[in-house]
Length: 427
Image (cartoon, rainbow, N blue to C red):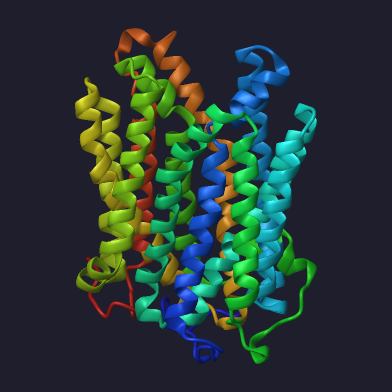
């Protein structure tokens, strides 16, 4: 059974594992790895729905199948994130990251050659399993970065997501004009290139003395979640992770439909808006995560960021014009600081041998949110543009997300009220 630390937020007594290569170079590699992974994922996003449509024939059926694909992807994240995290605690981070890169490359080749929608689904399932290794990348960051600098390093991972989010769909759209399957081939090439690059330059980050055996309890999602319950300092923060991710799902679930319904935006307008989201994310997480966390401390950064997210959702839900909606994007970008701050606080609660398991548990929480939340937000949207249209709040899904974020902030206040990390009194 997991032992409880004497006080919340007391750093583990075990020293950091020895790194076989320069720490900065390792962090840069992980940044490049995540960037290329997200770029490959983003490249195929514009064409996947169209490819599904070419198989099933009508838009309604295509939307249904695409929703099934999204659910299956989230389910794989939930099931396999703890397993990959536990495997990385046993065999090291390097082999899991490399196997994932090559696995994604093979997966995109399967999707490029898929003769039926069933084969596309197989590819999406494999993608969900391989992409679960993002947890291992986060564990790698925790291995090679001193506790006081982890928020900044995790911010770089967030910036990598932003880069992929900005460039991927744009590149995929251009490639899709040349050929509907070309984006999948390019995504495969990027993933295989990334794996080959890592094969030669990526050092191992987890020393042998910190490795632990793989057990069913550590590798299955329910057993992995019990780890969070077994550490007092992790219970509240894990609730913050879940509530925040649940709120975040409103964006991929309804933002495109909402923008078209309320502001009459076309695909170009939505694409530019998404590029703006990615650009703001890169700037805030890549450039401001370190300075803001240093100035405010991890606790205050976490709470400030969540409040910014809630404010942004208030803007999105109430904005009567498209220009007013855009005001919320830079505000929302500061919400991105919550993830690095929360991850940094959580990594202090466990030793080097449990970092992979911790990240796997977090990703399982995200998987649960990703499975449940889409139907909640699309259901709310349908109600407020249909039977409850007279109320005049088509942005109701964003206001529901606001409530979830306010709950996350409230939980965060209590979960971090005795922060020994920041050395500051409770707010």
